[in-house]
Amino acid sequence: MYDLLKGKKGIIFGALNDRSIAWKVAQRAHAEGARLVLTNTPVSLRLGQLQALAEECSAKIVAADATSMDDLNALVEQSLEHFGGKIDFVLHSIGMSPNVRKSIPYEDINYAFMQKTIDISALSFHKMMNVLYNKDAMACGGSIVALTYIAGERAFPGYSDMADAKAMLESVARGFGLKFGRKCGVRVNTVSQSPTLTTAGEGIAGMSDMYRYADKFSPLGNASAEDCADYVVTLFSDLTRKVTMQNLYHDGGFSATGLTEEVLEAFSRGL
Ligand SMILES: NC(=O)c1ccc[n+]([C@@H]2O[C@H](COP(=O)([O-])OP(=O)(O)OC[C@H]3O[C@@H](n4cnc5c(N)ncnc54)[C@H](O)[C@@H]3O)[C@@H](O)[C@H]2O)c1
Image (tube, rainbow, N blue to C red; front, top):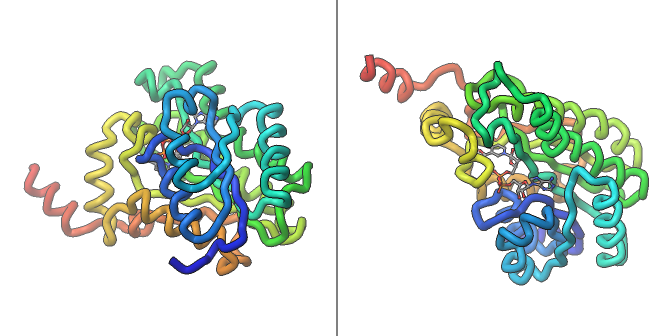
């Protein structure tokens, strides 16, 4: 460990269970010396295992539905009070699509569900930053990170309206990055992570094949949730103070690959 986050204070959204990417980020941030507030929906707090993580990381838990401005206002106020000062970093690790959950095909999408997908998976990022910005809650040089997937930029089967939500999430990072940068050097970035076997990940149709394909298509292989936590911690640290408004690929090289020999061989064997 490097004490990269020594003395820093952060809010982590979206740890549900020990497979969640946010769970790994919380563990890694704690190990690097950070103090944490962990948050998730009241239902997730009842069904998930957040209490165990909070004990492990000596963190405070605050329930909040990230689509509710009231909940977000209360969360930020309680966090400022708990920390006795401003917030250095925030992780948005939230995604949910009722269309994906119910396996509704993209071409026949349910629009009420789609609004929910966008609200939970993208607007929540805007709402969260709206509250942080208007309460002047971020410390100078702070860092805000949201997790995304390459389907926000390129078409992938099975990702459905989550792709639309991710495209919006990435755009919101740029929009708020412009504002936050001038407000005392706060950074806003998205991290585009490899397919990862988590509760949300496994909800995507064909995930296990996608996971294996991406692994063969990435020169470094898929990045795990633990690898992602390592990367996110660098973005929270002072070592990346001039990186903002970027969609940063953390995918073992998948996004820059045209073809790999392994995929070509597997394809020719299958024909
Ligand atoms: N798993 C993957 O393959 C993968 C790949 C790239 C990016 N991501 C992204 O990583 C992030 C974390 O997902 P994960 O894979 O760790 O799965 P996960 O299921 O462990 O986490 C998703 C979290 O979103 C929370 N959530 C849902 N609705 C919410 C709401 N209204 N308010 C607050 N929280 C809410 C859930 O409670 C859960 O904790 C998501 O943004 C996801 O899209 C995942």
